[in-house]
Length: 261
View 1 (cartoon, helix red, strand yellow):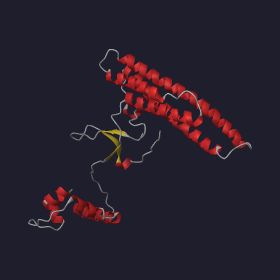
View 2 (view 1 turned 90 degrees about the horizontal axis):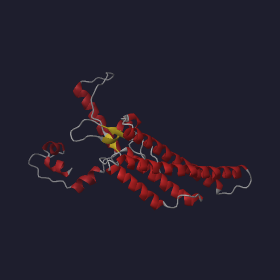
View 3 (view 1 turned 180 degrees about the vertical axis):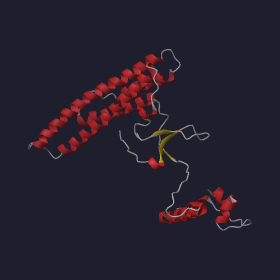
């Protein structure tokens, strides 16, 4: 920005400096002054620019205005979204969530978080790096099998949480409820929702991996999810030189729904 203010002749003329004016702006000076510009002033400037633009093209009030504009993508922090990587992330999120719930609600079967995630990571790495290996399909099958086994264990936890939920509801309907029961019920319902989201993602990615790798099917773009935390993320190709694709959402369509796991 300081380079433009000090080196671009047209911009310096707009700022009130002549061709022989040697006034130099530092980056800090520009930052201190630009931050003083209020949103109200920016709106007034935008309105003036629009009105001048209408005068240039000869647009009259009430006429249909046709124009072209470059699209802007609001990027999301999503790595290259392969179905194998997304299955690994969703399964890892499931394991971490279940381990937390094990201590919070005293359910069984999820106390070896480090071992479970390390094994999941190992199977994922072999499945990903073995693309040219004759044993790739075997590793992918093991990866899918392990992920499905974690999903079955999570469903068992859902059953235990459902039993606790019914017990709490029974106490709330009776006279034996304590002040902590409602808070515990809310946490259990949120936990069940989080686990269900993970299971849905895992089922989707497992199905896509099976169809793509074992059945040789091409997955349509409309069926894909590119981020498990920001499901509104889209794969955008604008055809610009040097930009093969962008992961995000067009600004005009930005209405994100964030998900916590």
